[in-house]
Amino acid sequence: MALRIQRHHRLARRAVRLSLGLSLALCGGVAFAATPGTTAPFADVHQHYKWNQTDVTSVDDAVAALHRNHIGLAVVTGTPPELALELADAAPDRVVPIYGIYRTAGEWSGWPYDKGLLKRTERALESGRYRGIGEVHMIGGFIPRPDQATIAGLFGLAERFDVPVLLHTEFSRANYLVEICQTYPGTRFLWAHAGTMVPPAEVDRALEACPNVWAELAARDPWRYTARPVADDRNRLLPEWRELVLKWQDRFMVGSDPVWPVEQLDAWDTPDTGWEEIGRFVDFHRQWLDDLPEEAAEKIRWTNAHAFFGQDSRSK
Picture 1 (cartoon, helix red, strand yellow):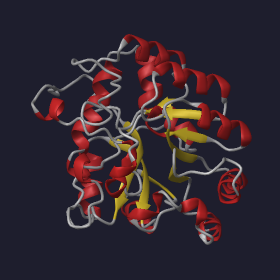
Picture 2 (cartoon, rainbow, N blue to C red):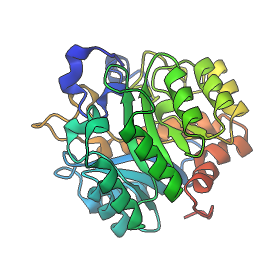
Picture 3 (cartoon, rainbow, N blue to C red):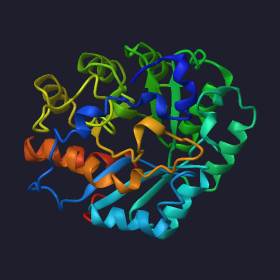
């Protein structure tokens, strides 16, 4: 994932985190076979349903994809935000809607300067329909200091309503995340993509410093974030990532982040077909989870998400 300003037009809203190293995966270097945990219930804590997906993926299509991939809990953010509620209404036993703070694709970079954001978010949380906030992008070169008024207000609302924030940071180290979590110790953060491009030592440092931070591994797969892989060509965690995940097995989760194709994200004339790819994103995580001790795998695949989002832990 590059942080180059010249790619700004492609990075609308959330695309800045995605690696464009597609050739490795598209050449057939990764195969997904059936694994022992294929039908075990899966908690997917990073899903989007957005404006440029609706033409190719209806609400019924998305719900069918959840069933087909045994996703018993799906944390969904919408752009515009009410799209997440459409999925929740269609599958209330599976979908946990969180409040997406972007109404259009281009708001990811300027949201701290949106004077109406806090009122909109407060009304959304007061409705009782949203059970989190996010995805919230905090990108080097775009984001102000963590104590800026809108940032402080947004994280204050999360604490007040006792809902977590799905937080995306785009820095080479965990310093900014650590400053945020220590500035807002009463707010629970789910760190998207385990820090996007940071190495495992930085994830470890953040989790050590921040008891109010959990991490998820959406998009850390063979098609995205390829510059810093978490797994080998057999889809088993690299030793340093395995050690990290087992150390913090109570604070890791997984997600699909169904966005595709990564080289044309949020293009006005190109639909996002991410929901059609969700099976392979989930299967990647199932494979490396099946290589972990059973208790740890169950926590990361299922029970941690239920505890974090206030669900019971029944299999659906």
